[in-house]
Length: 312
Image 1 (cartoon, one colour):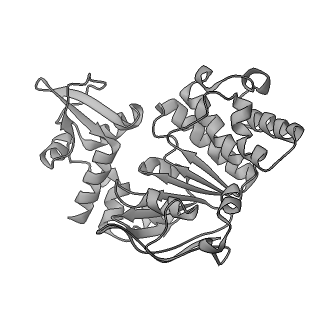
Image 2 (spheres, rainbow, N blue to C red; image 1 turned 60 degrees about the vertical axis):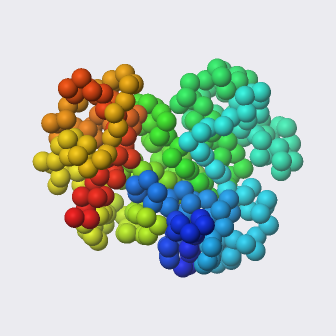
């Protein structure tokens, strides 16, 4: 069990987390979601001491994480990033077994674990074990990144926006994969995303953050059907803002003019429900032309706009 007790984090004079109190139970699939700058990644990195709180305590099994041996603690945690960061000069098998090797596992045991994990994620060990990262697609590399984090059978797996750079098909496949792995391995997963659809799809428990504050924590039903305030309601329920258009976002200062090529037939008069669909289908970035001007929107633009609407 992981607990945050009255945790604060400041960067110089800028508060990132303010009086955070939450509990992550063993075996949970715990998702933190919110607009950009809400404190999600800062909170995640406090769990493995990449970031230290300014004030307050983070506990694992009722013991302050500052009292754990850092190296031993991190060996019990897997970490998956958006930037896959596989070592290009190592084979896939060698990438997977980096942490087991640091634990002095035998070569035979390391090999057995690597091949078993490759098989679990649908990558034929005979075909993939001796390949190098540049021979794999982005989705395949991220599968390797996931199982590398699982290789030592950690107690906790931390995942920071791991799928946001992938195409929609790969993203959905990997969401299915981590749900399957979570069911099979019964580890605690702590997952950060800015995508409300991803949060609802994956999370057994969902924590909604905004500007360093915990707005609500609960299961899918709690969040969707019993939002605690207008921010949460606006964040997750685009349909209640159904009459708002893309032009409303532009008028509120969201989105930018760009010279990049278009990837959508979206128009300013289209409703934001269509923008949400286009963002989902275009890897979180939509570029469209209206009146001979190209505009660029990101998922963060839409989420921040909805958060602003929720505050009105």
